[in-house]
Length: 173
Image 1 (cartoon, helix red, strand yellow):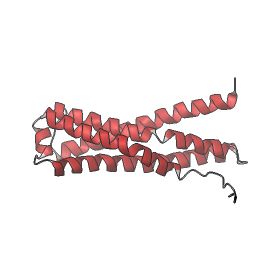
Image 2 (cartoon, rainbow, N blue to C red):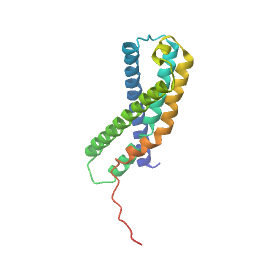
Image 3 (cartoon, rainbow, N blue to C red):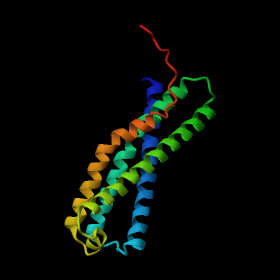
Image 4 (cartoon, one colour):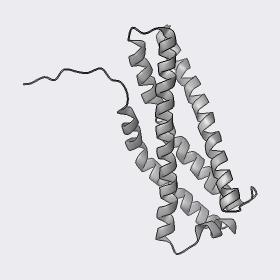
């Protein structure tokens, strides 16, 4: 058994699980507060819960792409001559930065999806969801998920640009 790969696998599982739980919990709370305070929607509204599920999926899908850049950072940092405590702190620092950037961008994609759908239709989406119009909720959810799928690779590439890759010499031919 390759111990380095096993440790890397455990690090990936633990970091994915912990960041996934935090991201989903934070998103759930933010959307619930927005729904309750701004839209005055109760928990038993099916249309709102469909939309909530779509937002959770979209944010989770985008943020899940940050796992590989975090692991790449860990690989590069573990190859350097820093102490284990510095390695752990750097891993947490880079991981936190990558997750924060990705989360903010994921929420912007969700908000953009809602705004785009709102401008495309003559409906008052908040009112329709408050009235438990599941059709509007499903279409809005699909818009958000589709934008998340389209934007995910670009967001992940942006986050990957922060990885401290070693400088490569340029070859002139």
